[in-house]
Image (cartoon, rainbow, N blue to C red):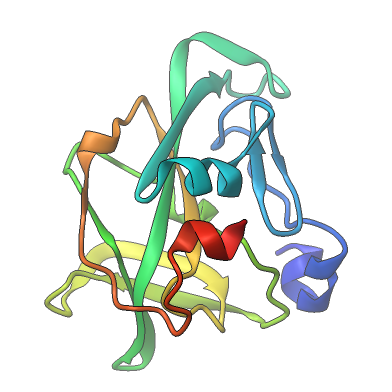
Length: 182
């Protein structure tokens, strides 16, 4: 448990910490973004569109952040398509489907492009048909809504072709996502 999960209002002044070994080397969190190798993830999405991937050298485990010369870690940037209650556990539908070979570290998911003071909440991740993906849960601020961006690290080099876009629900703000970020 982190200080920002205990007191969510602190997210406006300090970024939530990352697990250094799960993210690419030289990844730095900010209050509303993540910077990978000096490149802002939200700016990258504004330029390249969604879904997006950023691949960089992995961190050598237990090295204090040293980049690997052989291994890679990818950051998946996905959009929330639907946020809805399902049974007792609220559920999210992401606007992308991942190949079976892609294994994100869901426990490290981060909300991007806005700062939320809502308390953390556990969300199930569902497919388009409403069925829950087994063993997949995200901890994000409780006020997650359609159109929000979520960044998730994934070991290995993942290409954008390993992510199949799904049609997203129209957000309340009908401008293209790149215009909302810029």
